[in-house]
Amino acid sequence: METFEWIIALLFGAALLSTLARRLNAPYPTFLAIGGAALAFVPNSPEWTLDPHLALTLFVAPVLVDAAYDASLRDLRDNWAPVAGLVIAAVVATTAAVAVLVKLILPDMPWPVAIALGAVVAPPDAAAASAIIRQIGLPHRIVKILEGESLLNDASALLIYRLAILAAAQGDLTVTTFAPIFALTVFGSVVAGYAFARLTSPLGRTGDAPTAIIIQFATTFGIWILAEAVGLSGILTLVVYAMTVARLPRSPLPARMRVPVFAVWETAVFVLNAFAFVLIGLQLRPIWERLGDLAYDYALVAFAVLVVVIFARFVWVMAFNKALRVRIDRRGFNPPRPMARPTRAGAVVISWAGMRGIVTLAAAFAVPETLQDGSPFPYRDLILLTAFVVTLGTLTLQGLTLKPLIVKLGLSDDDPVGRETRLARAEAYRAALAAIEGDDSLAAKLLRKEYGAAIELNAGSERTELADAQNHALRRKALNAAREKTIELRRASVIGDDAFHLIEEELDWAELATGR
Image (cartoon, rainbow, N blue to C red; front, side):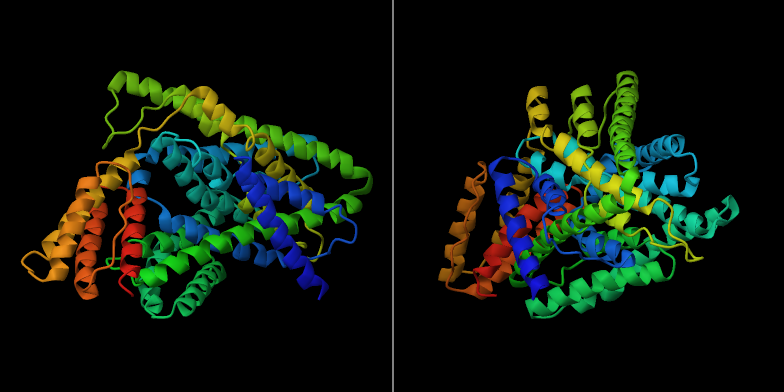
């Protein structure tokens, strides 16, 4: 009973911290991190443990699926160079810098362990940055770069992490064994993710929302577990899976199911973030007690890693931005569609938006407690302590100062998503009008007036509410035509995924009004 009471109290506390964060216009993960650290030193706090092998699966898999489902392939293609630079080069540079630092401070630390530590703290988490970005109209290009990075850098960082852990455990990983593992992991995961999406899509075609939600969660965890069991990357497999499912020709979920499903996923992501910070925070006190005289020395190492993590990202982003601007000055700026030019101010924001989050905490927790010979994993307590210090430090230092920095730099957005949304809404309603053209019933006449008014009002940003009609079947026919047109616009890259999801949500609510 005591455990249940603590869980209820922690969930309530997380909700209060999230509410406080919104009131202060701050990212809620920052307050969760502070709360998790404080909880470690609360008298009689619970001593919970979690199987390290379960940590990544439990905390990362649903978060990845939620982010990948909403990811925009079009925007990723448009910004492939800066995204690839952050996903690959920045992760590798940060991992290398941290590994060299801790190796210099602790010469007896094995290189694989040092690299594993670097990979744990390398991938930023855009959850905190997104919470701030939504409050301020940042240029769309910067938002898409940060979202693309947070989606894919986990795969690159955890691939390095996985190989480092394997080398630390076995001690015989060489280049000749690395290449086949890398090829199998990357290409095999991409193929497996696409195949899983095609094979499992019929499972979601159920008319019951709770059943569909359970199937989705079971499928998410099942795909991760199966991918890891056969030696693939659970992260890369799930990212490809979710992005493929989001773009299947026809969505298997009707509006009356999609709305509650999305709400459940959003809640699940919040709960997982809360428990990740709590569980890692609860490890701080026993770690601190086990370290004894080494506690303050290890704390200094953790703070040194925090400085290097921030500095390495800043150096890479600013250098890449400078090279990109020089190239643009020589060859011109010719993007496939209108977007903001790279600027020094934008690079500063991207540099400062490198806050760590749930992936760093889960990866640290997933470090095995023992090696294959049964001996303790070297410096595991240091890895856990450093992961929490880096996460808490970046969320506090960068998370609480990112908004003032953006305001100071004067960055603003020209609202490309709003323009695309208005375009999609007008085209969707014209398709709805065409679908009922020639029908002289009273219901059809009412709908034509309603949709015509929606097109006229579309010049503004107001959201047009769709009123009930006498003939729901006719309304659904019109809405289906509007939905097909919206999908067609996204498929042709006329609109991006942000505009698509806004129109999809609007059409979902309109469909719900028909009683389905």
